[in-house]
Image (cartoon, rainbow, N blue to C red; front, side, top):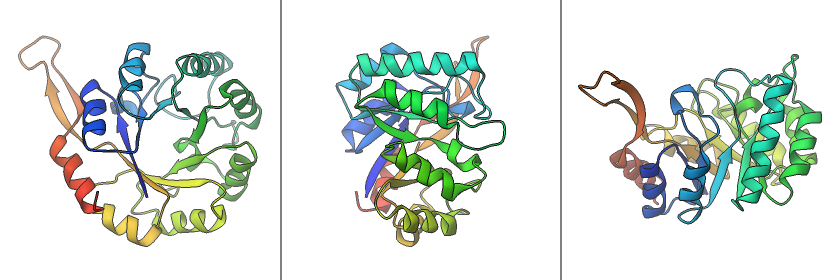
Length: 231
């Protein structure tokens, strides 16, 4: 089973490499679920760990405007030029079905980049049709909580995803993965991969007029999560 760290900072990238994570999903602003990271952060990650870049212009839902979709295609092209491992993408129609037309265009631009579908999949109304569509489009994997608030609550459906996939696409369990549930999810679902951020809320810039709360990588949590699955 592969381990993917959702990395949103320079420190998270360094720790992912130091502790032997198989790859990272690189993003920024975990506080809104992650958005496309900066060019500099992509370059920082490239030489340190296998990097798959989240392509998402904002937080919120996955029904994007035509302008947002155009920007995402530009971001995919930039990741390809930067020669990173893959992109993490997804988009839905107003009817909450996969936006097949956009995904086809994105896949064409991505070329040899590995394609991961992010948790837009969990908002799709017909998961069986969505999964088969991703397979047909050449996606390597799908990140999913089993269409539940977290992967523990969605573990029964996650097992169904694994069964239907028949190793044609990797099922990566993610969403609310923590030290208390990771071993259970691993044992009961048998996913191809597990995805987590190993973060905690911290105050940044204490004493500054710009003090704020942010989700930050926690090295102790990362070690505990890896130990829980014998990594």
